[in-house]
Amino acid sequence: MLEFGYIKGDGVGPELIDHMLHILNKFDIKYKAHEININYNSFNLNEVAPHKFIIKGPNKTPYGYKSVNFYLRKYLDLAVNIRPANNIVILRENTQDIYTNEEYGYGDVFFSKKLLTKNVTERFAQFCKTFISNNNYSNATIMCKDNLLSDKYFIDILNKYIKTSVEWQDNGLAKLSQNPEKYQVIITPNIIGDIASNITSLQEGNIAYAASIQVGENNIVFEPVHGTADKHVNKQTLIKTGIERSLSFLLYNTGYKKLALSMYKNAKIKIPSITPLSNPVLQENHIGWDILVFGNVNNINCYKIFHNGIETKPLGKNYYKLRFYEKDLNELLTLCKDVSILNIERLCFKETKALFS
Image (cartoon, rainbow, N blue to C red; front, side, top):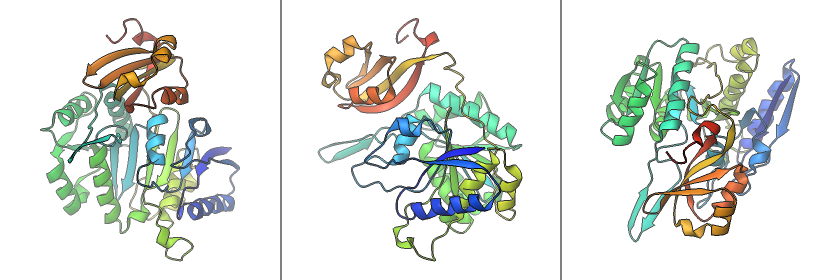
């Protein structure tokens, strides 16, 4: 039996989810669909995490709030974003780069954090290798800016797993706009993948046609890539292709391949075969969390630090690595509410022999 969770979202989201369920009801499929009630102002990890497959509508994000997708990516560890469109697949690293949602201002100077870690990038590289092999692609291109230290490191890690060509993002995005037929798979850091996938979506005629797949170790999220499109609510102008493609991706990867393929005989996409994210570095039993934070660590209650198994390592001015043992993630986030969380990684047995080695 097909079983999944769904998030209705905002704007046209409820209409799209209703349309998706209507399609399923027309098929001869037994399924269980569980509504997940979360939004930008109310996110409960325990309500989301049990669902291996999730299909969602677009969500609003008012100024000053973090988006539902930000929470999903961070706390479900959805480290890969797959965007098929126009016979091209964008494999986008999904939790690092400048999309960590960390921005700071001092007077009239503002800056954002650009984050890249070895563990997360190696896991992304291994996924890309498996994806390219499983889907029978013959070439792949890394697109980023290799004169930047972090992007050069990104390339070096990927090239340990995959043989690829490398293109500067400026030239690569221009070539993608003019000659998309030259590409099969494009591998990118977070922000470049966002831009590249918008280009390939528009090449099909409308961004509302496109859908994405966010992949983690225990969860896979399917959704149209467009926003809430409020002006199209309850109107004939609403394009439903994005949610239909999301459904076809879900069906294809849950044992209903023929049905999924029948939905898109003429579309300029190849429905991807997906395997859950693996972690080549963290293979042992999970016992806690390592987090990278920015802020004054003294704002965290010292009693809780020393009586809840937390160790602290300063990495620079106002940067700290904190180690939590046997913590529920929601409890961890509560403890760290007074600092900015830059990255979260699972802590496993084999890493505990020498703390912060």
